[in-house]
Length: 250
Image (cartoon, rainbow, N blue to C red; front, side):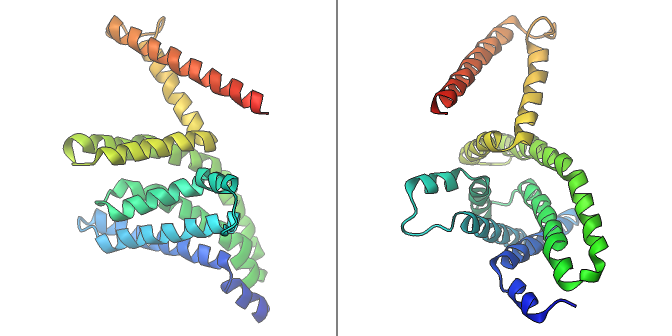
C-alpha cells in the first residue's frame, strides 16, 4: 500500500492536474465520437474536450518554462515555438469556431498516450505497487506503438484535417483563416516533428514521381510539369539557403 502522504502529494501536484486534463479529454472525446456515430453529435462534449486540451497544454507550457514577469524575450520566443504552444493555439481556435469533428482526433490520440504513460510511471507505482508487471506491460505496449502512432497522427493531420478545412472552403463554409492557421501549424510541425517531416517528404517524392521526368505521367500537360519544376527549384534553393544560415549561426 502506498504511503498516504506520498499519495496526497501526487494528487495535489500539477502533474496530476495535467493527467486529469488528459483523462477528461479522453473520456469526453470518446463520448462525443459515440454521439457523432449515432448521428446526434453533442456540442457540449466537443467544447469540453477542447477546454480540457487547453488546460493540459497550458500546464505543459507552464511546467516547462515557468514564465514570470522577468521572463526574457528569448525564453518567450522559445515557448511560442514549442509544439505545445501550437496545439494550444489550435485548441483555442477550434473551441470558439464551428464544430470540426476530424480536428479532435489528434488531441484524443495524444491524450490516450499521455494517460497510459502517466498510469505506468505514477499511478501504478503509487496506488498498486504490487502490480508493477502491469506497468511494465503498459510501457512495452506504448514503446512498441509510439513511432507508428506519431506517423499516423502526422498523416491524419496533413490529409484528413487539412483536407477537411480546404474542402470546407468550397462546400462546407470553412473560413480562409482556418486554412491559413492550419497551414502555419503544419509548417511549424514540419520543423518540430520528424514524423511530419517524413510524411511531407513521402508526399513530395510521390508528386515528383508523378509530375517530373523521366517518370512523369504521360497525361500530365508539359505546362504543369514546367510550373512544378520551377516551384521545386525555388523551394530547394530556399531550403539550401536556410541550411547555410543555420551552419553560420552554429
